[in-house]
Length: 300
Ligand SMILES: [Zn+2]
Image (cartoon, rainbow, N blue to C red; front, top):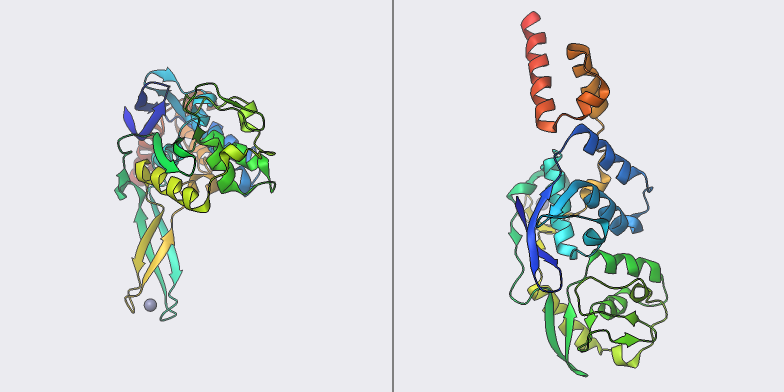
């Protein structure tokens, strides 16, 4: 059992506890299919994240982690889960290279993701109340569903405005705006209609630039977060460089690339069939591979 830094808001409670499914070879294959099955369009990241997480997660607070629930998790929780899953799949350490802009030397450095801090949500999450030109208004932290909705908007509206409109929570429950559709009180339960935001021109939802900045800052304040930028000092001249860490780097990995080799090695030694080997947990598979290697060293 692990806990989300934010939590899934079901309308009255924030559900924080979650479990991934047991990491078997079969699950690794399913995850590999989820990543490669949709092509490499960089805009499809939110869709891929939903697909990967709904395969990998077993439950959130004891309830099945359906695709709908995964859609409606906040963006930082989804980032946290993707990084956590990458660590479980064996991608905990990574090497980065940087060309120093100050001394022109190239340097390498290593990151261990499980050592990076995670900041939990603050009081009030997933909502904030901000004093805008329309008086005090309520907003909620963006979800995966919001990100997917914005992808569909295209160039009709800038994404920040669209996101703000999706995350606006009208005071009256069930408020229907002609253009925006139904925007419910319940966090993340936006109806399909509400996800069509392409032709919004509701004056009620126009916020000034100053308001937009205030709302963004308030949401950031209450949101949980994983580290997405780190500073690395150049060992030659000491210059500090900011490096971006993609929270969804798992989408770039060739998950399961080693799996067929592992199946081959285990099948040769134990004569189990593919299905039996795929049912082994990753941990158990690695133990057998170690034993096989020890045997082969002993025979040499
Ligand atoms: Zn340098």
